[in-house]
Amino acid sequence: MSKIRMNTELRNKLFNKIKHTFENEDTQEREAYLQSREYVDEQYKIASELAKDVVERSYPIDDVATLRHFKKKYGSPCDVVAKDKCFYFAHQEGVDDEGEPTETKSHFDFGLFGNLNGSEYSDEEGKKFAVAYFREDLKAMDCNPDIYAQQNENKDNPHKTKYVDECMKALGRVGGHYNGNDNNGITKTFDDQYYLDVIGTSYCRSRAIACTKDEYEQFETWRIAKGNLVVNHQKWIDTIMKQCDQLKIGLKAYRYLSEGIELATELGIQVDEAELIRTNSTGLTIYNPSNLASMIKGMKNKNQSREAKILARKQYEESLN
Image (cartoon, rainbow, N blue to C red; front, side):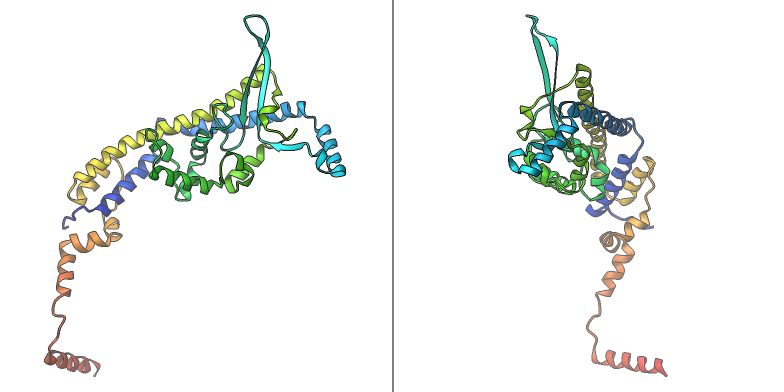
């Protein structure tokens, strides 16, 4: 079989096929990522049920129902019940050096883009959690959920912004932190699970909700679990990136397709050369000698003489008889 020279398209096809295998290999890093995501689900269930108990302890459901009754009766002056998915939880079970009670509090946001560090405003880490959590969904929508991990050491740039924006759109995120009610799709479905009734329509930082130290620590455990998912996603993608960097160097150095297929075979990856060629018209037509010769021959003798045309016509008519 004639050797086929490498070209950009063939290199890209081989690269993507091998990279796909890297991403689906059963490695320690991938397993840690998957386990941390399962742990997030467990902690979300525990923390959200606990949050419901703590919030309803401060804002009893009977009081909420009464206030809604008055709102219906008197209108906006009694509009003091709202739904929220983020809360300031606080406990006062410690004392300072002078024996005075100390308050420990933090912001806990149960939304998909909720912060991971207690800040009410910073949501960049929340975006990293969202793409790591819904990685497969985003891949299925032709997005790149690994963009934050791939660009971890780079500042914002057009390449990064493009893929981040595509992920946010696919997840249904609309606008910034304060446009949460405009979100749709995956984000809205996720967030809707965690809204609770609170009394008081001002920002959540103005209404610290009392909880015990144990309850507070449970909320912290849930938030740490979210952060660990981001960390394990980063570690896993780092290993893939290192492999892909070496893969690019090798494929760029190879002159023939057979060398790339040999590399794939050595990596335990089966590649159908015929399929690669069949789906690559440029490689098939130009670099395969037989096809190239046929193509060149077909370009010749395009202008027939009058005698040749008459002869061809006679041969055609005789074939019909």
